[in-house]
Length: 181
Image 1 (tube, one colour):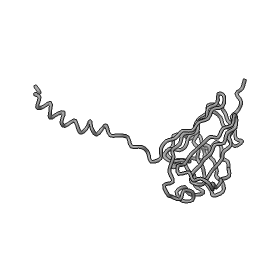
Image 2 (tube, one colour):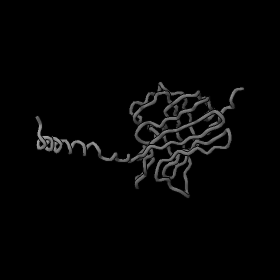
Image 3 (tube, one colour):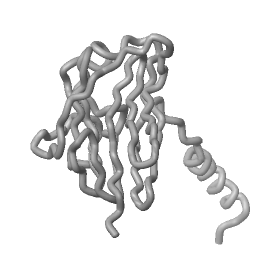
Image 4 (tube, helix red, strand yellow):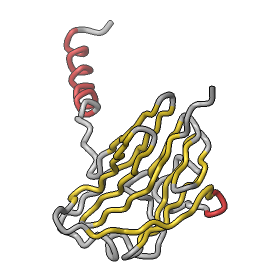
């Protein structure tokens, strides 16, 4: 039979394991962010991670020109739509997609890819591209975005998807389709 002293020592041995398992979860350096928009019965959601400038030269250095980028940090950025939409004149079916980009100084190539759940752009497969198009890159003169930011500027059934980081702004036009009667 186990006496009180033995129970005390057994509990004393278990305490470090219990205390260790209760460590606080540390926040990610590039936190997760979600932006969304809704038009009638269509819902659009973008899930991405926000890297920060932290005094670094972003485009052309941290994010090289001419290379596929995950459009954020950590996992590849994902776009989910519940109904068909039009993105930069391309008909996009309802579903979930990865968004990759190829930044250049004066324009960006936007890639909508059907491969999801990817870490970064390491396993990017161009054969899974659904749409690929170019949009101009604008240099901002009055503001610097410390964190990579995605915003949706919506006016009824049209919206601009904004990619903002450092002194760069990229605008991707979106149009929500009217529900079928």
